[in-house]
Length: 506
Image (tube, rainbow, N blue to C red; front, side, top):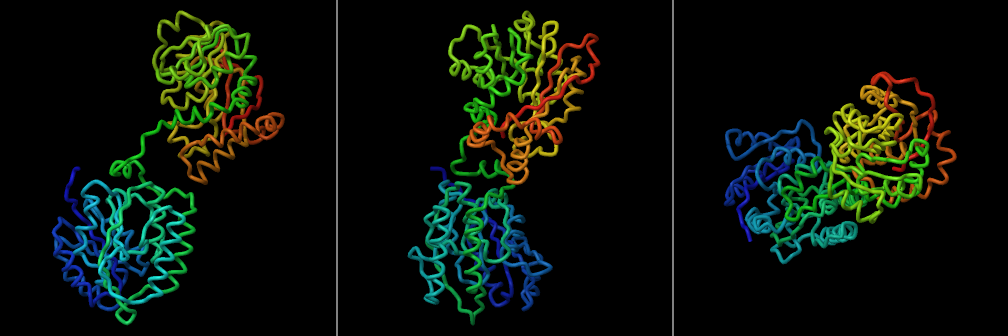
């Protein structure tokens, strides 16, 4: 097992601790680690700030003076962002916790077993005997937190929490006061981090000695446990940075493949799309960006289709397509990226129909790609393009799918005309889908399309088909389809002759 000694950033939130601040700094300095000490004074009024001036020229100590009292959570948030070492340790200034326990706290991280370590006051550690009701309250809050997070901690409310720096700096902290404890516990549980707990010594102080937490903070903790455990709000700044330092990072997923698989069972939807473009489907069809064959399977179900060529830039996707669809002798496959000129094998054929569904938005030079498709059409052949619509609902869902853009009708028309196509029909579709995309991506902050969403929409297709034109006519929809052919002069297009409506699930 690899063992290395981590450097540490010790973050000390301070409020009116003039009696103990010098001593806690001395003890932290005495620990045998490369370190920095970050003291965040939360607008102390008892002379603590004057004492902190003694560290102005100390290279190991950074002092941050808050302009107004914001609470422990706010002070920690400032300290975390100022940290520069490998690991961040939370240290109270009141001498209740002993820095001599740092080595025990750091051992699971040094041994590459843990991402986060909690120091428990209830795991056989030496501790001062004080308030029974506090102990009971701590255990109750820990139990409640464990029920929601499914962690088996013994001391959720402990001060001693140790984090790999890249983890804590990429978690948004909202709680201003002592709500930090249940908040951070709920959030690390959602990240599936390796959490360890080790016993620490505890020398609690009485209220006469300056203890600040009260029963009101305990009541607030109940609210924080419920709030942060049940919230679906995104709280991560840079998930990839967290994954890079985790003991067991999650396996990398291909969001594009996951999305294709989410649509695999949406057969009513796939069939509906093909029904709406039915007049443009000829005998010889090529699909650009076939993926795992969701549209191809619908094409092969049509007896009027004599041959289908499935193209994709991914050979593995085409292999999956073959596995799914069997050995239909009408089907051939070809690896091709539409950004590149068409291969000779495709140029030798001319197609009645080229279908490009949810591909053009992935291509930076979409005019060039559309031009390459046009080259493969026979005279009077049809180029059918389906793209996501509505730039206003562009969100993290689009980003993780690799979308450069969402389109307006005019933008899609311009791209096709620039490629030398004559636009014959423009089809707005699926206002319900646009609302769902806006809700999931813009409001809920989701970045992955879920299979259950597409299945739910697929069940609604029979109900939406008769009314979809009415719904989308004034507002547009989640996607737009354009049907075009080769322009006689290779440039300008005729005026739109027809506008229709179609639907696509979210």
